[in-house]
Amino acid sequence: MTSAPALLTLLQAWPEAPSLPGPLDAGACDALVRAAVSHGLAGFVEHALAKAGWTLTPDAGALLSREARMSAARGMRVRSLLSRSLTALAAVGVTPVLLKGYGLARRLYPEPLQRATNDVDLLVPRARVLCAVHALEGMGLTTQAGDVDQDDAHHVELTGPGGMVELHYRALAGYGQALEGDALVARAEDATLDGHPVRYLGAEDEAVYLSLHASNHLLQRLAWLLDLKLLARAHPKLDWDRVVTRAQRTGLPHLAWYAWDAAHRLLDAPVPPWVLKALAPPRWQRALATRLFSGPRLVGAELARSKPAWVAAKLALAPRARPMVRYALRRLRGLRPPVAAGTESGAPRPVRSPAGRR
Image (cartoon, rainbow, N blue to C red):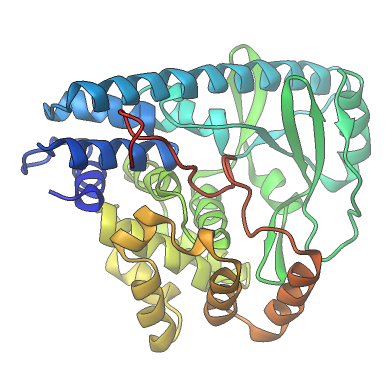
């Protein structure tokens, strides 16, 4: 069994054990571990392997265990930063919506530290951004320069020794369009996390947001597809009609289709066929997406490793050409990599083989 089928087979079968045997030779075990690590799933895969009864070589097993512990340590650091941020915001009467990250993993994964996360993403009403920024600066974070009025801006970035907080006033911006945050905040649901009052997107809004976010980054991290599968499984009564309606209202229904189709096709996410039909882009874009988002290509994160290929793919898959062209020209002038390696919204990072060999 090669590395791509091994990882995808494990994720597709979850929460059941795969019917196929696991990788046997050292090279296949090594490749499976490196793929799990690079896609932010070292901890989850370690857990899933134990449930499946798959045995790795000693070197590969040691590497996976080490990487899972390192990922968990980073997650604990993010959890601490999140807790301090929530305390600071509560002091000024702001209860943010938690996007992705630790809050999502806490609700969907067997253990929250099994899913890699490297920063804190918070969504607040646009009218409370300045107040929230001042509160976070008061805990020692420094605001990075940026223009909140830019068409493709969607958050204020604050950094400090404890890590990075992205304070969103738009849920996301990409493909030359934006998903505004105020309506999502208004529909968000109250909850608590480690004793702090927080808010989460409603299940239907989260189904749309997570799919748009994944497609905005061209599905280059398999953890994002697994998020969708786990979300759908956690909400068996999900109102798919509402999901379709809200995805269409964003003006980005194609992006929802790319992610949910790949999650269904590769990981067996439970999505009704009529939902995919309702969200589907033109036939030629469906064919292109199926080719670009094949299992081996996603495991290898091929698009994240080439800026020209990245831009070409986004242009070809864009729901609307004109906004995407303007966006692409701005990104090319900025000479910024398509995704930041090693971050929550970034490309899979490389990992050395157990014996130091490729």
